[in-house]
Image (cartoon, rainbow, N blue to C red; front, side):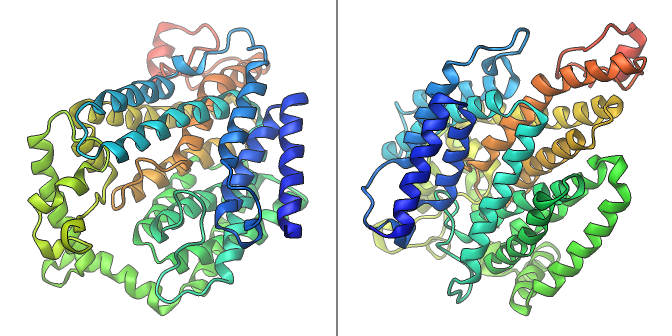
Length: 460
């Protein structure tokens, strides 16, 4: 057994022991470490037993969490809109198993989203204070720093592949995942001090370089839109620092981006403005979109997971498929279209409901934090909202329905709205009289009695 593998076993045993006997939060950090280290794909784990490391960490963390006593007045995870939507979506997946076109892939998706229910619960329940959320976001950035270090030493011929962990081994998925770390790291740099701030500053070049090596157009656009979200939600007390670091980040990105990257990004404008000069990837997406509209019309209750690939030979010309012979197919390249085709009208209703809730939650946080003097809470709200935005924007071009990072972000967003904001706004209102911007609105619970006129003005 390699020394690295032995250290991994020791660290995992220590983390799970602390999760059981001290705090389940250590188990959540252990789970994150396993996600990024991904032992099955690393050379140092060749002599380790073939084991479900992440599942073990999740189960131990769940057992430790179940021993915690729920604080009085806290909304349970299953009564939050995202929690309820995830429950209904997962239940619908299991029902669809009765007619799924690809039963094996659909079973895997049903099991995955069942796991995501527990993961959402753990993030919502455990990451419930300013300090814990800062450390969780920092762990995310550090994990991406590790992937960036691997990417720096990887052999890249065209695009970076095979560096990430489960679900992010492919270039587009890795780029999207790293983009969520960019927006998180940008906010952490603004409010942290000392070694944690320096660590985030060091991590940013590695993370940005990985996005460049991945050559993902969807991740590039997602970073840009995520930056716009940061601009509107940034802590006001760090405004000047935000502009300074944003300028430095832009310069750094321009230094890292090479000609191959910019040539690939140029195809975005070409595909949008010149139909005759689209590259094959853009043209395939257009044809696939039209085919999926017809699929969704023919299967209103969905085809089950990977149904797009199963039906694609019947709806697309052979030149738009990948693979040979009977295996030739084309998977979905858009998260919304994936849901529409594969989960049908019920899935679309739940998906759109989640998007509406996320948008309203962002508005709620922006208004509710008007009375909160903490730049750290405002930073966390901006980072999480921008992270959700990154996944959504990137999902316009690639199917990220099963992306795990969005579960982390939704769990933290729900925690901010239903656990953190009520308590912190109540504390702020004790120091200052309530204003029209103070109430949380209908997404959360009111934190103090307000007049009917003020309630209408301050609600979402």
